[in-house]
Length: 200
Image (cartoon, rainbow, N blue to C red; front, side):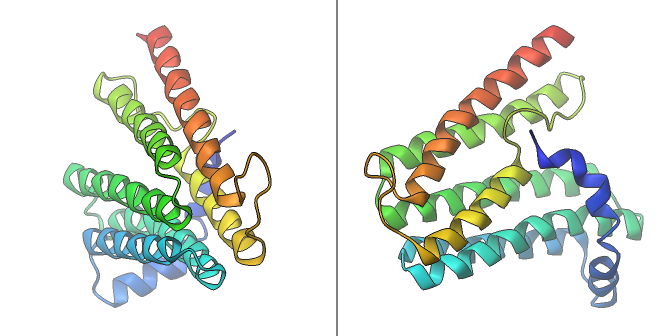
């Protein structure tokens, strides 16, 4: 289950965004930086932990995910796609992941759970790029890819804005999301590892 398989469908909806970015004279790298700054804004909103700002954080996370598609599409449109731009995009994506999960963690004060969640997310991403490094190709598969995480954070942010009471084992919806990232993130990393081992 991963939304990353629908990247080609999303690419067809990017035209207006790419045109606006191009007319504004933005480079793909600049769009990548803007996407990261949007994620940092989401992290700050989540860290406050107020119901009103959860909705703001949710919208910013979804915007970050969309801009993460725009930068690549803009690079292809301008004919300047490069390994350097792809590298910058991946680095900023990882910082964005850490920032957003850190913000969610700070908002509810569940630091051990947040640590487990962020390590699961980082290992999932690491396995994807490591698989590419050994020559198999980029791996987006698994139980929970980045697009899935961003969509879930967006949904949970909206729910948390309306309801923040404990649901299970003293965890509210944000805590349950971090627990999901912790468990499924590590399982996805293992799934990617085993799949790559079979292909080597």
